[in-house]
Amino acid sequence: MARKVWFQLVDAATRGAYADTTADSWRVPEDAEDIGDLRKAIKVQCSNSLAHVDAANLRVYPNRTAYEEEDAQPLDPRSSLSSLDAQATLIVVVPTQHLAPRTVASVAKLPSTTVLNEPDKYEEECISLTEWSVDAVHEIPLIWEFMSSLGGCTNSGKIFWRMEDKQVVSLMVDGWFRESTRDRINVHANKKSILMGSPGIGKSTLLCVMAFHLVFKHKKNVLVYRRLTKFEQENCLFYLGYEDGKVVQFAVQRCKAPNAISIYEHLIRQQGISNVWLLLDGFRYQDIPEGVRTFKMLATSQQVDLKSQERIDAYCCLLPCWSKKDLWLMGGLIYKFATEDMEERFYYSGGSWCG
Image (cartoon, rainbow, N blue to C red; front, top):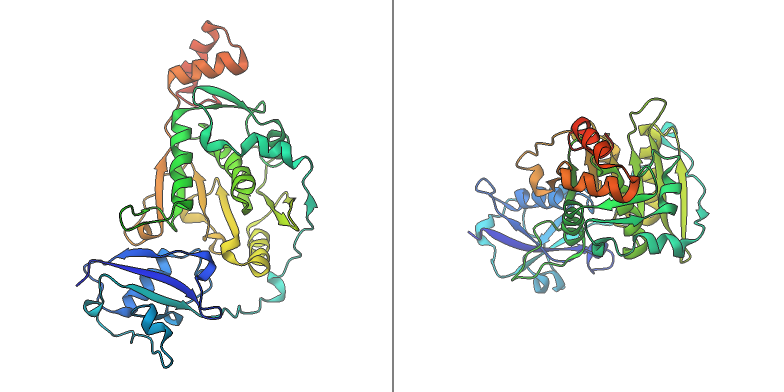
């Protein structure tokens, strides 16, 4: 039996690629036996794109030729995987979605958007994020001001960029946007990115800057939901996206989970789930509300232990604590601390820049 199968999601209505997806592969586990198992695995692997589709509604065809036949019939869910051609690309047809109507209690008004002022200046601050030089300070005054009432993002509008930051950003962007080839598989394609690390080392700042980068560099519509824990802070949410070619935004302070879920559902119905990128900040992985689990990125201070099945759908990366060298560089470049001040601050911080 083939140990790996290739598949392409196809829209039942257009007969073209579903939600702009490309061909992907699935490594067949030992306990997988039939097409039914395959459908469940694809549902998990492509959970963002297939969030509102049941695995049982996916129709699988052995190849494009079989799918295009006039009287094409999908493979029986009980068909053995051993009969599949390892060299063929399966066609997995996604039915036209009919979303169930929500109850009155779940309906909340979608906040009105306003055009973002000075978009060109925002773009200058973040568009070259993947190319930022390390051991250097980068200024993000507009992003800092935008985030000031939404949980904050840096203390000064300046960010010291470490090699570890650059590596994490490169890993995530590569996973999201590089297409797989037969010679070079993108093992992180269509997976959730989970950024872990100790409190205070810059995960949330990285996530916020990444949100702006996705909007201005990759033209994505991005929804960010933040769990805030400091004194007198409450969860908040903000959105950046496109309307008529212009960047628009809205923000909701004191945003409880039901409201955030309702807003996310509104945007999905309005734009399609593949066109709304959800980023979560500060949530424990196991406590993420049911309605916002189809995230693209999570930044968390809690350890995440993915089960074997969850690893099909997500991967974790660790942002290390700060080294003494980096803390000293930042202290001198941004805060102009004297040497004796930095020695004492490093002793108390233990590798946390906000210590």
